[in-house]
Image (cartoon, rainbow, N blue to C red):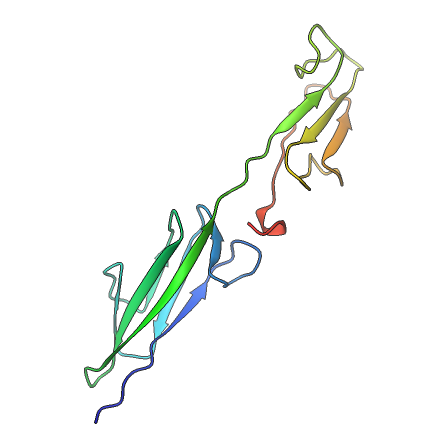
Length: 149
């Protein structure tokens, strides 16, 4: 009796909160590496031990491993894809002709508030930041790895 191979899939990715857990952010990729045999066939039709995938949604991948005796084993893994958050900035100011339009008079200030919980505006330690700019553009950057995305 010929021994069966033992198929295994290792997942390598650095997106999301924990590396290599099989959960990625939308647009990220993961490398899947099969082991346990001498030839491989993936559900993607790839025939190499390792494949790189960039799924647009949560996707299950299957690999069939064959050993030198022609015996096979199958392993399955799922890559979960989390959507990216949408960040926005609300402007509160009373300078100029229209309140809250983002246009202020010289020397006036505006309060910028990020629309998502725990987001950061510029380098502020809160979700709001009061600024007195001189021709400056402010950007909200949501750091998904900090919030489980």
